[in-house]
Structure formats: C-alpha cells, structure tokens
Image (cartoon, rainbow, N blue to C red):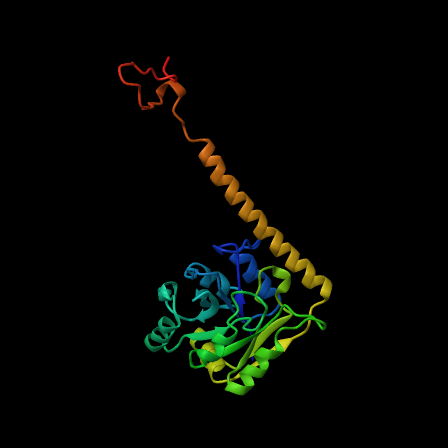
Length: 263
C-alpha cells in the first residue's frame, strides 16, 4: 500500500499565499514516508517536469494536478494534461474525461460550509466524480466530513483522505493508502476502482484554529499588499503640472476668457 497525498498546495499557488516551496513539500513528504504526491494549485497546473527527478530521488512519485474552479466550485483534477486550465464548466469536465480516461476527478471538501464547496452540485454531477475527499481539517468536536462519507456510500464512490495541505504541519494527519504500484496511472486507476483506504486522525482544536488564523492572516496581508502596490504605482505616475493643463471653458460673448491656470 502506498502512502499518498492527493491535495497539496505550494508557494507557486496563484490564489493562496503558501509559505513552503514545492521542494520543501517533497522533502517533508519524503521524511514522513509518502510514496506519491499531487501538487494541486488553485486554477493552475504546475509543470512538474523539473521536479519529478528531484522527487524520484527521494522516493516520491509526482502526480500532475490542479484544484480548478468550475462554475464557482472547487474540483480536483489529477493526472490530466495541461488542458485542465481551460476547464470552466462541468460539461468541460465530461469532455476532458472522454479525451483522457486515465485522469481522476475528486470532490474536495464537498460539504464544508464554504462558498466553493460543491454541495448539491456533487449529486447533480455524480457521474463525473471518481472519488470524494475526507478533508484533514477536522477535530473531534468540529467535523464536516461525515456527509461526504455518507454520500460516497450512497453513490458507490471511493473515499480518499487528504491533508489539503496549505502548511507543512498538515502533512501526515490525513492521507490515502493506495493499493497500486508507484506510477501515476496505476495510482489513479486503483483509486477509481476503490482500492484505497483512508488513514485519518483528528487534529486538536488549537491546531485547527492556529492554522485557520494563519491562513486568513496571510490572505488578508496578500490582499493589502496587492492594493498598496496598485496605489503605489498610481502615485508614481507623472501627472501634468498645473500650467500644462489645458482647460476649455465657455467665455462670455465679446469678452476674452483667460485660463486661470495659465502663467
């Protein structure tokens, strides 16, 4: 059985501010005994060509992936080509699966109380999804995963565990054990066929709060810096001096009008 993480973000993410690099994620995963890892940036598929040899040298297989926003909801697309970046609708997902049958479609955090969770759309498009995620952000007191487990049982879909890693300390508390060889196609086929087990343990409430606050603060800081950068660029623009402004105002008939801004 391979220890696999199917949902992880790195500093290359264009949406969330992530403090660790892809290589740091690989190093941490290797130290924890992972055999395979999918880097799933928001709305961007990372080119893993240069990273794959680095990961292989540490005993880890990299799986191409992306957490794509589709009709406002998050969907994990694994082991597909770069065409995933053009997927905008669930009809696009259906066409992508037809063209690339070795890919894997997973519903991440489907019933969490957040705007980008699939919710009812998961049932509406049940045939498109190969598996459902048990998300690692849960405690003994707060857990939004049971509805996903019930849905998976009802619709005969495999359940996969993932850390949804935004911070390195999230690795290791929730992951998948996959009965497959160390190959992206083999791993995705095994998950699709249900040869997967979920290994989970709840995190402490303190850890959950600390992680959530850290992520929210980082995102807020990123938005502030982005706005400040825009304002800074605007303030650095060269504005015309007063005597260079040409103002045309109506003059009274028979009288000469002099521009008050002219020297």
